[in-house]
Image (cartoon, rainbow, N blue to C red; front, side, top):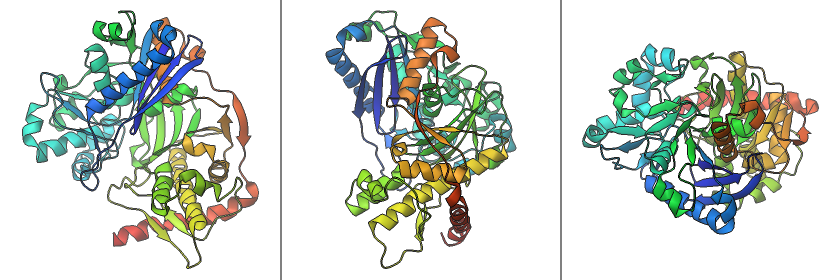
Length: 483
């Protein structure tokens, strides 16, 4: 048996699979996010460990014999977070998360140095790890002086599981300290950022064994002492493993808290000026590119909270089929935006609200705004030479046929919806564990899921939505002038 642990923003998912990848059990454990100031997003790393303990306790209670047969664990997690440890591996402050924008000034200063884009292959976004440490150095110097190790969230969990300081290349590619093409830490970038190589964990491939489960933890859950822990991956890379997306042109669109449009690449071909991310894949000698919007289903969740409704109730107001764009435009920049704007300060807006508009019209505007933002990502990816002939639709938002049909129409690309099952980052982590334990070829383990149905673009409505998209595109520079 193999265990995939996905350390998400709002909770941890644990998935137990057999050697053929068939799911035996799944458990989810939630934990809070703290927003002590505007633009701040933090978590207590102890909450991640407590959630993992609860997950393993639950699996032992529900599937004791399957858990006892565990051979390897794979890890996935939210990217870019900064977990700061002292020389005794004690956490120095709450972890600063991927959607924290306090370090916008530090990110801009780093990005102004051409070396960062040249070596890392990416813009230095405010959400990345390096500017977070620059912010700590400027605003919390006593804490900064005690930093002996910086770990990404899932790698702090790895430290607890194994006692090892290690990270995989896909997750570390989002720090702005890494030479992404060479798949190694960059001494030059570390020095420019005021960091040292000894403050970085050693790097492993996503399919490589990084250590073994501590004997005391193995004994607690009745496991063998030889349980392996493999490198794993950042959440998007692990999700790509979960849906078999690692060949050139394979892609998916994810409608989760954030929105992602991802395409696998066989080589390293960065294009930082587009604000497209170019990262190492969890599969060796492979990379991927993606556009990211910061508020996808989060936008609908926000509207639901304001209207006293549930997101599914609002989505149901629209039905299952699109019929043309509404009159209201929504810019989903509730936490700033990454692709294509790289703007931590911009905020969301509605334009064109009428006195007769209600929940249905606002919901349509929000869903259209997220879809328009994903089209921005598609245009950015196309400018790098990426061609997507079809996409898999994953994430909670993909349960809405309306939303998926709208995205397919805007992108002009059919979207396949997989058969019922878990094809997310936790499954990808478990698949990486299988490859790390058995040595099997990734293509043999990371197969694409069976497609339940395909939602085609609506050619009859494409022109109308293109006109609405042009209006959406015109709003960002106008809004930027007044905010």
